[in-house]
Amino acid sequence: MENEIVKPQVTTARKLARKIIEEMGVQKPPIKINDVCEHLKKNKNKCLEVMAHDFGENTDGQIVEIGDSSFVGYNNKKHPHRKRFTVAHELGHLLLGHTNTKTSHEFDVYDGEGFDPKEVEANQFAAELLMPLSLVKKEIESDTTDVEELARIFWVSKEAMFRKIINSGLLNKI
Image (tube, rainbow, N blue to C red):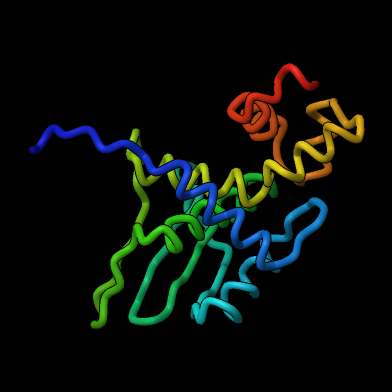
């Protein structure tokens, strides 16, 4: 069926991010993206390189797989919060199996746009990786109820934190 609507696997994406946080033993924010990458290299046997690149105004990042190697590029012209989210998002694509590894000199670039279930999944993975629900709840329970302060603690934008709070049903807690 050509027009079949595919529902994003949001729960799967979030669970995968939580599993990584648990494996790393992270107990408090912020989640350091470099530590996540090192964990993946060491524990998931991933040949992974992360690098800055000037993609221009319209692209935040890309993931390229060549053989057994994965390369995450992020736009070095963007805000640090955007860079972190972009790398987490691209890692989501990698870990959720959204890329196609090539064995020759061909390479696959995953840079989806629009409403694509894979983009939704990668966004949910990134949000849960950078703002794990358990840690957000813990901060709120310890009386950190200002969105701007929560964003500062987690090294994310206010918009990202606000979305996390709304999507997690925590708006009545702040």
